[in-house]
Amino acid sequence: MTTTTRCAACKYFRRRCSSDCIFAPYFPANNPQRFVCVHRIYGANNIGKMFEGFPEQLRGNAIECLCYEAKCRIQDPVYGCVSIISWLHREIHLAQTQLAKAQAQIALLDPGVEVAITTPR
Ligand SMILES: [Zn+2]
Image 1 (cartoon, rainbow, N blue to C red):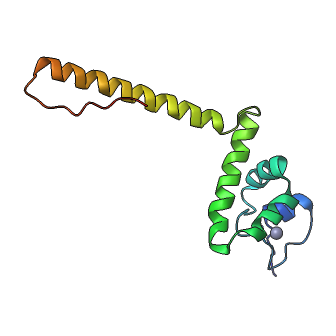
Image 2 (image 1 turned 30 degrees about the vertical axis):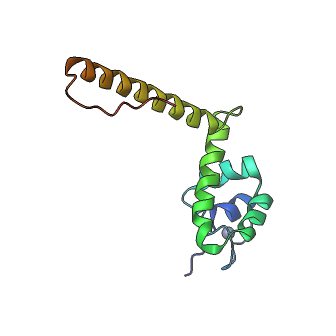
Image 3 (image 1 turned 120 degrees about the horizontal axis):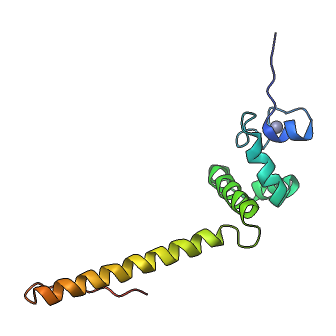
């Protein structure tokens, strides 16, 4: 008895999964939601076209980025992953401000100590 496992993309489209299916390495059958997200945002045909443009050794990283961006876009249709980037920028700015305040307080308490004052961008 042989069992053939279709990848998530071929399962979604209800077609046979060939041995050279470009989706099979990146969309395993046990995680269909991963393909559904990417297909919903980019479309399977566009993903296939993008794959052909990437060198094979970079396809894994590229599909990880596409999956992450698609997931973010579904969660936040207006900003997508930009909302996370903006939040992280605010967090960095807040941390830099707190660091500058702490360094200024240290400099006031002990003027003999040289503190490299950093300023937030
Ligand atoms: Zn397949």
